[in-house]
Amino acid sequence: MDGSVFLVSEKVITLFIVLFIGVIARKFNIIDWDATKKLSAFLLNVTQPLMIITSFQMDFDSEKLKNGLMIIALSVSIHIFSAAAAFLLYKPVKDGGKRKVYEMGTIFCNCAFLGYPVLKVIFGDETGVFYGAFYTMFFNIFIWTYGVVLITRQENKDNKNIEDKNKTKNKLPVSKIFLNSGMIASVIGIIIFISGIKLPGVLYDSSKLVGDMTFPLSMIIIGSLISNINLKDMFLSVRNYYYIFIKLIFIPGLTGFICYILKLPAVIIYMGTIMTALPSAANVAIFAETYEADSKAGAINVGLSTLISIGTIPLAIYFLDNILKVKI
Image 1 (cartoon, rainbow, N blue to C red):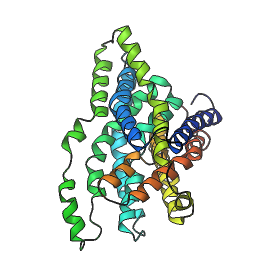
Image 2 (image 1 turned 135 degrees about the vertical axis):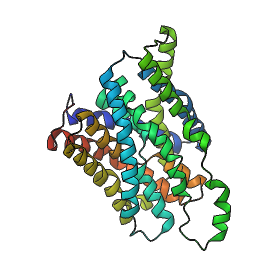
Image 3 (image 1 turned 90 degrees about the vertical axis):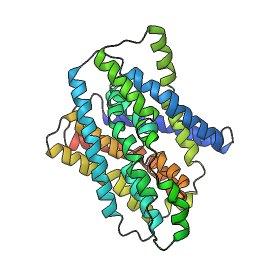
Image 4 (image 1 turned 135 degrees about the horizontal axis):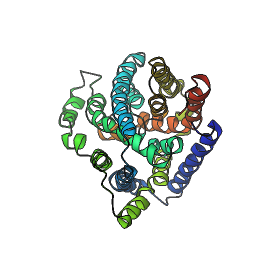
């Protein structure tokens, strides 16, 4: 890729400085939990969809479309592989509540809040978001299907009270699978890209202005989400580091190596490695809270993986550039 791993590291660190601004804002009660939820809804339903749509506002390029379709296939493969790997790798974890949170955190990366900013740094403004939109299409389907099934999985079959309480929650939210804002924006963007439709200048400029809020807003939201995690619980558990090794080192390294052995295009190798090197999705903590799983473990996994990824994302890029010698 153009530039060096040090430049990318600098950009990633910049993002995380914004994250700590979010931590400070939450600590001083400038934003509270209710404000964080509303900001998250604003990002997911307004700024991110506008960012996705405007990123597709480019001249049609058959090579980019081909890459996009390959990225969808890549996303399907990675999510299914990660689900199988996580199921096997966390078998030693005896606590069933934590085990399914670990599985979910390993499968689902932080596409919405951190993925797009990182891809923008690596691939450039429009192209990074363009490729990210293709990857997240299957992510949105899989998290609202397998993700819901996983987080509501009954680990203790004798616990009838929990089973009865979750019975109504086990239904798959069909509207969220196919009619979520990210999926709709991606489809609209693809139609715009293929058809060559151009948004009027004023409409494009205003949409892009709001869409560009996604990057700082996403990091502030993550900072707020992890601000109240007990540092002792986060850093002093050996089990947490086993999870971090699987999530941020083993899966990305294996994904990059497999893509390299299969001689896939450089863009696909980069996408597969970087997306699996991202920290756990914020939805892991949110789902754990919503479906009455181990929400504390979910918050710790999201928080710790987010902090450690400051180092592992540049490490993944170094692995691609200097070990596998992949260039984009």
